[in-house]
Length: 249
Image (tube, rainbow, N blue to C red; front, side):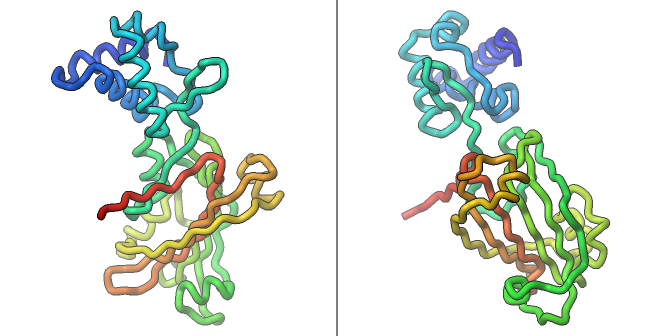
């Protein structure tokens, strides 16, 4: 987004905001909305404090407070040389069951995928245990690279008993849409997480530095009647993805 257009957007957002809110908070909300709506892309440099002060007719203290709050929230990152950029890290909440596509769209990013394989096969020992099936059963196995605004984020491998997905080759961009169409939409999940080093092949697929750590999430998904419908292993780039959980006392 051009700087002039961004400043116009911020002025309009601040003008129609709650006048009872402190000025720094209104600036903060305008910048946050510009990020969430993709007017400011990941990695984009925001206007300087001096430019924001002049364009919004606000003090340096007000602008700095807004930027510092957004830095603490992880939306902005201050680089050497006084440039402040939109953070390239992504956050995933562990308190709700959402798909990768839902997570990306909620952050103003366009989800995508690059299919590696869609097949019917015999389960691996790990898939047998996770799905509660025998070695003689058939599964649908789908492997793909998940992207956000065309940037590779994760490698995902989903395994499902073939009765829930008899034709894996017919799955389009959304596995959950295919499951919903068959009346097999998961309603509950159990997850576990661990960290693992990246392999050379994974680094190539994810376009990641060779020493990047991976955050591995294994998820077992259940239908309302308790049947296990899906076992998914997703390997996220640890250098761009954070997992967040909200705790209550």
